Structures are given as structure tokens and as C-alpha cells.
Image (cartoon, rainbow, N blue to C red; front, side, top):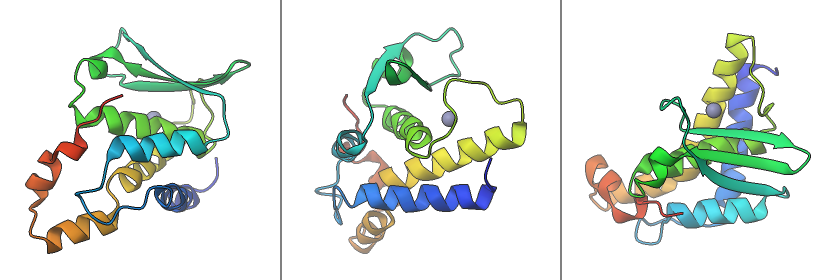
Length: 158
Ligand SMILES: [Zn+2]
């Protein structure tokens, strides 16, 4: 895989580009579902999102590409918890793997590559879902971090 720093930089750049699709500088208008919808519509890929009950409850999401297109599968654990912020984060993380061009649906023998891919997908998701400008504007408006995370916009409904 490419160097680790390049991968993080690419994740930061791409998340910025996708954020431009739904510009929000205020928590009042910020909406995770809309940001993710805009991103999915903008990806030039045959993309399907499913829920599946993984035997391993630690697996929250998985992506793979085959002749039918790209499939993101989320654990049904998340489906039953629509208010769980992990639903949006897991989907954004998996979308990160897709848009960053990570190898999908295979297991990587090299642990360092896995860490690099996972970390850059997390950077992508965090930047997409918690834009710096939104956080700064909310702090200026007097929101505490706890209030920010409890705000209804973070409830994600598929
Ligand atoms: Zn991952």
C-alpha cells in the first residue's frame, strides 16, 4: 500500500470535497443522513447498502466489490438502534474504504496495511461527519462537546 501519511492526507482531502456537497456551518442545519446521502449520490458506483446479522458481533460493517457492483453491509445490531451514532459512523467508514480505493472484500495478511486502511477510513468518516467548521461554530455558540453529541442531528435514520 501507499505510504501511510499519503493515505491519511487523501482521506482528509476527499472528505473535504464531499463535505462541499452539503455545506453546513451551523448545527441547526447540519444533518448526517443528508451528508451521507449526498456522498452516495455523488459516487459513480453501483452501490448497494444492506443489513446482515454477522456471527461476529464485533463486526459492524463490511464492504466488497464483485461483478454486481459494490456492496456495503452493516450489522443488524445497528439497524435496531437507529439512534446509535455508530450507524452513521460505520456507514461513513465503509464509504471511506470505497472512495479511497482500498482493496475490498479480501483479508490483508500485512497488519500494517490493515491499520493504515482502517485509520484512513476513520479519518474520512470523522471529517465527513464532524466538520471542523461546524464544531468551531457550535463552541462559539456555547455548545459543550456533550451537548453537541446529544443533538438530534446525530440520530441517524436510514
Ligand atoms: Zn474498516
